[in-house]
Image 1 (tube, rainbow, N blue to C red):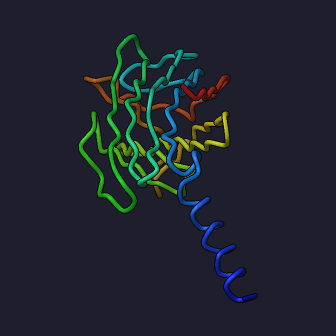
Image 2: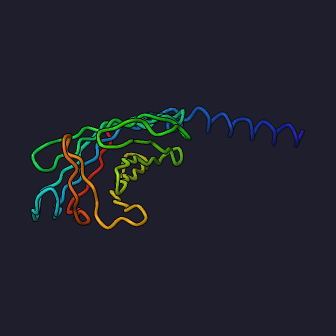
Length: 168
């Protein structure tokens, strides 16, 4: 009798976890970053405004997608991220894009450019989310590349002044 009761308790617990609203929920989010960057090539400019905004979704099946637009130098590039855990990089403006699902509530958007990666780490907790933009130089490189849809710009590390993440 005791074994049956313990078994029933575990079955109810497992079913509650599997069918909870959080486990079945889809996390739709909106991210935004704003800052400035100084560039050397193709022309020397200081304090260029840089803005990155996008919308995405983290699905309970481990898939995720997002569309993120980077605006700098008056021109914009939209990067589409689509994938699942372990999916290969996809073609994107100026390089490749990749989604890495890092858990049920976390994902990483990676835009690979010639000199660097722009990595956006997103974490969803309950009814809130957080986002962090992390520029990462590739080994041996000293300048970050930005792609505005037509031209590569060679710049210093971007200075991020604002970041936001909201669930929709």
